[in-house]
Image (cartoon, each protein chain N blue to C red):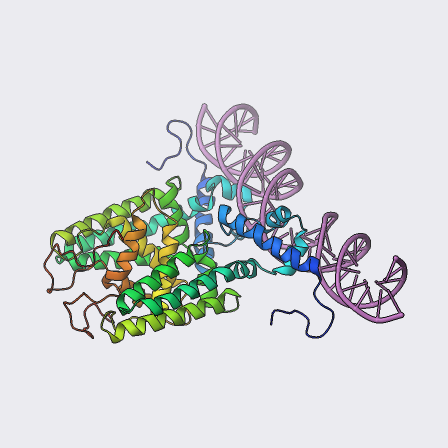
Length: 209
Length: 209
DNA sequence: CCGCGAAACGGAGACTATCTCCTTATCGCC
DNA sequence: GGCGATAAGGAGATAGTCTCCGTTTCGCGG
């Protein structure tokens, strides 16, 4: 499945070695400088020429997609764990969104290309995104059947919201509580239910958990 | 107040003319290509050298800030109108956020530098942003005193959310209803109130208005 | 009207980043 | 070991940002 050539001679070992090494270096590089760092700098740090980098990963998105693959698997494992262990559909959806939000924060600046992938569909990131939208729809559907989520909300909107929240997190404003505030805003909104709950209600207040 | 020199000779007319013309061209340029277009291209279209462009506006942010100034005044006018005409604090906050959201969508890609300005504070956009955060806090405060908004939400979070929503709007996903969905998600959340409202309630459903 | 000094202009070019060729080096197989 | 396929390397084409400095234009006083 991951063999390059179908019939011919087998893949050269130096190619595989380079690929792996570039991935290691890029992981480190993106982790410390965000995804906007220079491609040539990655090549240089990996000790290869730019040509080699681009042959392996024709675009920054391709490199990102390869890097995220390992994490994708973690996320899928987490999805399965939630399905298995969390019976309350409301909690399951919340936990899935939490997991998604962590995945999306793997590297600084990641939300941007993910959003682009969602729109254009031509990026190697697009397939992954699409899969996670589908998963979101499933958790959401279950929550909606149980009356735990509003019936007109759609999975793609929740996914986009998660992306947007992660994007906003990049602007912490020297204030560490904003991320939580944004997540709970997405979950419960800013508005109090009209004429149903008393003013000052704790309904929907973000918990420290 | 807007005179450059304090005592000396008066500002050269060609400078003022160039400044105005650059602004006109940049407005048009950003409107059609988004704020990421090449600075040199703006200079060229305006018929000036890059040096002239950069002397007037040392950074892209400075140019943006100058462009937004006119719109800032519109937004402030709208703020005053809402204060004057909308007595219901819930509606007032909603309308203010709507106005803010339109302002933030003036140019494609605007949310990004605004977020950066919010964090760094060194950009010429920062002061403007800060002012609008304050206004948001005022509308929010009024709504909270009336029990129309949840008491722990903060103005800066609402502002950031508005920014994030506008950012996400850039990824319409060939689907025109997402923007509304995101706005109403921010307003009412995805979760149904726990144990208070029947499943399937219309509570918080986005209206077409 | 003219000339002078200050102010502003223009654009060449230094710098950085992306991405592409084409030559050279290396590998897999017999 | 040798041959053909495959990959590596890196110079360089292209594009964008921003600066520096020689040249032009302007405002003002005579």
